[in-house]
Image 1: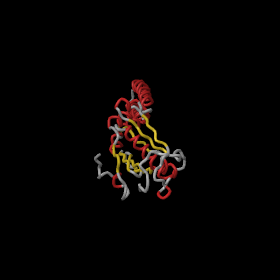
Image 2 (image 1 turned 90 degrees about the vertical axis):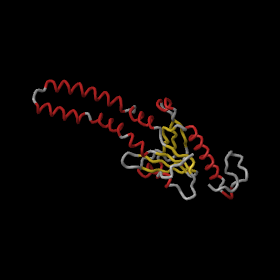
Image 3 (image 1 turned 135 degrees about the horizontal axis):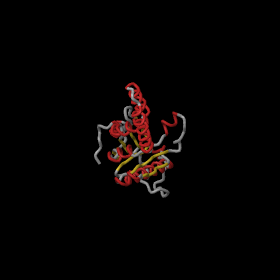
Length: 216
């Protein structure tokens, strides 16, 4: 697999770290999910109601100043609709900044619209690996792989920033990535239970590659 060595995630790897998989979300799926989000029905209903009320109020208002006031008021009152539209428009910018990198040490990801966040989750922190495919994912042949730990869900800012989950979203080779992460998680866990000198020559409890003195 070819790797983008100019990627910031690539430069964040450790000296002895080896890349295994690198990718980005499917663009069409990313945009469609931004359009068909839970806010869409609310934004449509809000726009329809405000438009009907605004047209009726505008038709009865004869004074120019009153009409200008109504236009300004309804433009402001349509704020939920503008927020929804902005989310759709900015989804492409978010897509540009979204990238994923899997190495033999952990998982890296980046994302954001204006401020970009770079995250890293080592395998030792990963306790659950889940595969999710929504309706749009299934239509376009992509899927999401979510990585969480037992610490996820803490309410403090420190815990949230350090332990929140990572979602590798809208990727075509979701099954390959899911199987790869499960294998890496199992290998690292087995290696942790039998580190170096305590590791038996043959680990019959797990079918992993970590046999003998193998450094990871």
